[in-house]
Amino acid sequence: MRTLAIIKPDAVRKNVIGEITAKITAAGFRILGMKLMRISKQQAEAFYAVHSERPFFGELTDFMSSGPIVPIALEKDNAVEDFRTLIGSTNPAEAAEGTIRKLYASSIGENAVHGSDSEENGKIEVGFYFSEAELVANER
Ligand code: CMP
Image (cartoon, rainbow, N blue to C red):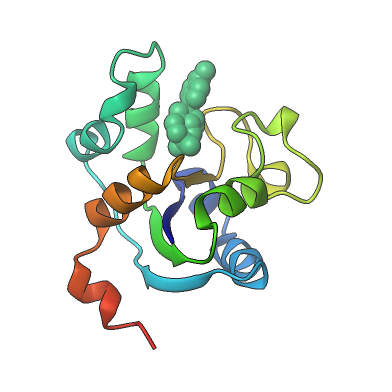
């Protein structure tokens, strides 16, 4: 199963890309694709379209387009749920000890990482950032 992780602009600014990817691989995820890039406000709006009616949509898309991000396509059995366990609750104040958000997130908006919320969204979100050719090139 695949899931999409994104190291968000706050974590890139904190210089913890290495720390976060080390936790991801130590937890048994295989990296199929990874890139450092910047998305426009319009691309952030497209990626988070399901949240377009939420009051925080403007803040979320401003933030996600405010600096470089690192999308990572991951593969593992039960990847979606296991990745959400590894990152912890959306609100870092509620995140379990040792989770990526507990360690590196600042607030509910600037929460260090994104993880897909279902198997179907995992496929769609991986496809938003990576072509299939980029991913299969890394399959062993
Ligand atoms: P993410 O997993 O990337 O998916 C949607 C994002 O919306 C979520 O992480 C949070 O960063 C953000 N979000 C959720 N609730 C709020 C909120 N109340 N204020 C700002 N951002 C929020």
